[in-house]
Length: 113
Image 1: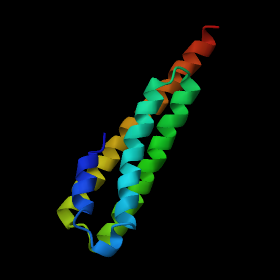
Image 2 (image 1 turned 135 degrees about the vertical axis):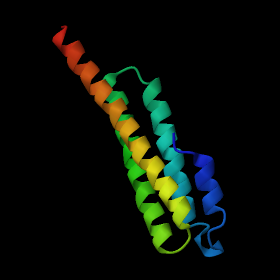
Image 3 (image 1 turned 90 degrees about the vertical axis):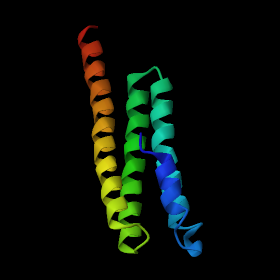
Image 4 (image 1 turned 60 degrees about the vertical axis):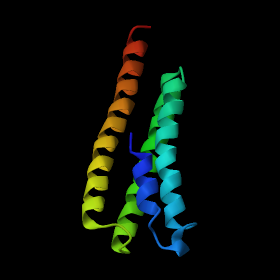
C-alpha cells in the first residue's frame, strides 16, 4: 500500500500555515486508502468488498490531486513528485485488480447458482 510514512515525512516539511491545510488532507487521504482496503478485506460479501476497495481508490485519487497541487505550489520536489506519482499509478492498478477480482468472483458465484 502507499507508504503512509512517506506522506507524513514529506508533509512534515510543508510550510507551517499548511499544517492544517493540504498537509493534513494528504495524511487523511493516505490513511483512508489503507484503512478502506483493510476494511474491505475483512468483509465477507463481495459487494461490500467492492464498495470499500472503490472507496480506497477514490481516496487515492484525492491524494493524487493533493500531490499535484503540492507540487505546483513548490512544497514537493521533482524527484519526490515523480516517485509518488509512480507509486500512485501502481497502487491504482492493484486496487483495480482487487475490484475486478471481486466482480469476477461475484459473476462466477452467480453462474453456479
